[in-house]
Image 1 (cartoon, rainbow, N blue to C red):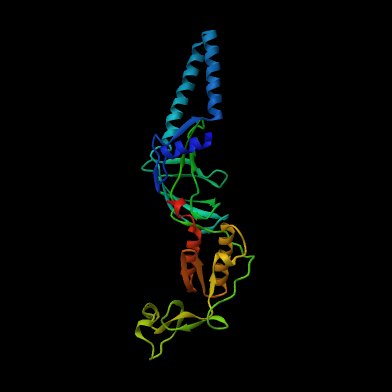
Image 2: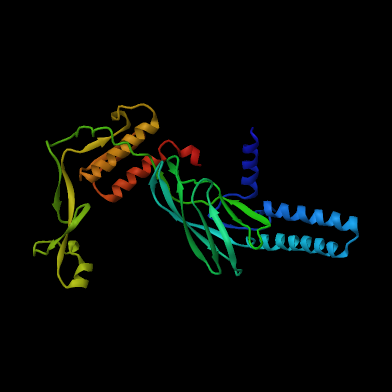
Length: 315
């Protein structure tokens, strides 16, 4: 086992992942900065000169510099101590894209100054706050499944820049990363009854399509009562039902090898069918989603593709 792996295991035990993390003495680390080491080096040099020449003023300056450094350790650590970080939400994205992540920072009654938050090699934001504040960052999702951006760094060098205090925090975001999109493959042929693909607009079926003026023959359960309360006009809700053949999407029809590539192709097909208003169904080993056409149907299919084959890994 590598040294990095050992360190990550120790860090996971010391600062476990959670949706809400409060920084305490076990979760905060502190060391001198380069300026801090230089400050201490100068203090030691002055002390040696003072001891050599028996200069009381030089001794006083040495003790003042060391005392200031000790105060800097406390106030720098205090700038992070007790602060709470809460995971709010993150965008649903495809693998390889950047997700906008929302965090809430709670000062817990203390003013926080010059707090930097960010993932390694990603965007970093610096903020000061006295009350709860929302912070939005971007983080790239490298693989599909449950969004796991890893640990981000919370640090500060306030007030004098002589010490740096930090913590590595891992928050749980309840969102999914969909498979990457591959639009290079043509849609498979439709199957079933009918020669054409399309949809028929009817009153009161499955996929909402709009409204029209109320007819006396329309059922009262299909009336847009909310719209009537706003405008005084009585309209009937219209829905779309697929007609003709349905398109079934499966991994075997992709013509590529490798699970991730197959999922990327099927994801591209799902988006294309939705854009073309073509009803589609999903046929995966052990899972089957009947053909439909709606945003909710698309999101359901993408969620299944995002977690397909990852059940054991996410448990």
